[in-house]
Image (cartoon, rainbow, N blue to C red; front, side):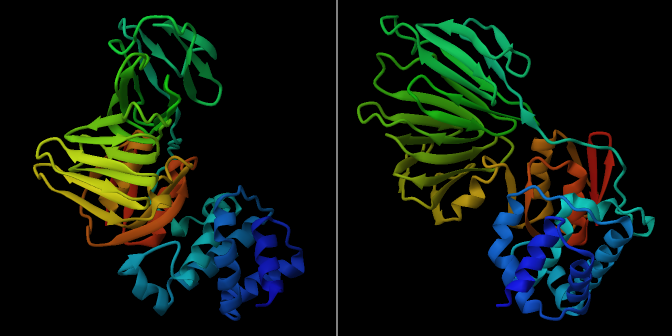
Length: 397
C-alpha cells in the first residue's frame, strides 16, 4: 500500500496536516479515489484511533467542508443500501473509514454552525456516569463512596476497608485472629450512572457496572465456600483457592469457580442472565431445574426466565467486557437494546414513539463521551431521531 496515504490519515486525525496536505485529504475523500489505500490505512489503525484522544486545528469552514464530503459518501448508492439494513462502524471498512473521520478530531464535525443539518437534539448536556456507589456495612450504616474521603473508612471482623482515589474499595486483613465474618455481610451498590470496583477479603477483584448490587461476607475466614450475590452486571477476577469454591448467585443462576475471569449480566429487568468466560473454567447452574453446563474460554451461557434450559454459544469476549474497559461496543443490535444500556450509564429515561425494531446498529463509543455525541452518531447511522427533554430521551423514526 501507499504509506503516504496512511501517514496523511494519521496526521489528519492528530491535527498535524499542512495546508497542502489538508487539501489532499479533502481531495481523496471527496473524489473517492485511492479508496483502497485509505481503507487499508484505517483498518490497520482503527483500534489505535478509537483508543486515543484526538484534537484538530481545523477552521469552521474546513469542518463544514469535511462534513459535507462525509455526508456525500454516506448518501452514495453503495452506502445507502447498507444503511437500510445493518449499519456498523467496523465493517465494511469503507463505512468505518467515513464514520471514523466524523468521530475523530474531538467530534468537531458536529459542532459546525450550519443549522440546516440539525439533528433535533436540544443543547441539554447529559454527562456520562462515573465512580459512584454506596457501601452498606453489616451494622446498617450506609456510606456514600462518592463523598467519603480516601483512606480507611471502616473496620469489621478483623478487616479494614480502604477507599482509593481511583474508584475502588479494598478489604485488607487487619487482625488475622479475629472471629469469622462470614455471618456479617456488606453491600456495595452502584446507582444508574455509576460504576465501582471492589477487592474482596480473599483478593478477588470485582468491577460493578451501573445499577448493580453485590452482597458478600465481610471476610471468608472459617467458611468452606466463598458465596456472594449479584444483581446487575459485574466482571470478576477470582483469586484462586482450590479448597474453597467461589459461588456467585444471580437470580436463578449460580456460577461456581475456583479461580478465573468471567462476566455476568443479570439485570432484573432483562429476560436472561448471561455469563461469559474469559479464561479458566466455570460451571453455570440453573437453580430451578438443576441443569448445569461447564464453560470453556470464549463461551457464554444464557439462562432464560421461566425456562430450565441453559444455552451455550461462542462469543466475542472483548465486546462483552468493553464496558469495563471504558467503551460501548454495539454489534448488530436494535435501538431498544442499545438505549437500555445508554439509559443505565447516563441515568436517563427512554420514551419510545414509532421505532423500527428490525433496524440494526453497530459501533464503538467511549463511555466518557457526552450523551449528545453518541446520539448524533446513531442518528447518522440509521433511520432514528432523538429528542432530549431533561433526563428523558424521546426516540422515534
